Length: 78
Image (cartoon, rainbow, N blue to C red; front, side):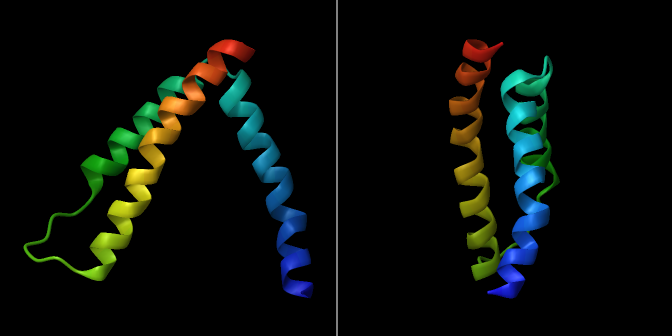
């Protein structure tokens, strides 16, 4: 419980800054699309499937729709 409280002291202000950036910064849609494309391009290719690769694909798969959901919010708040 103490560890969770200590982590929240640092994470909540960082998330507030990230949320503010995503909704109000001029270049936010470009940064989000760029990070998504860079993450997909820098992903190392391997010949066989592993659970680690499955987890990474799950993370990339949940990030991509977020870009499509945040960009209209950016247009609404900008």
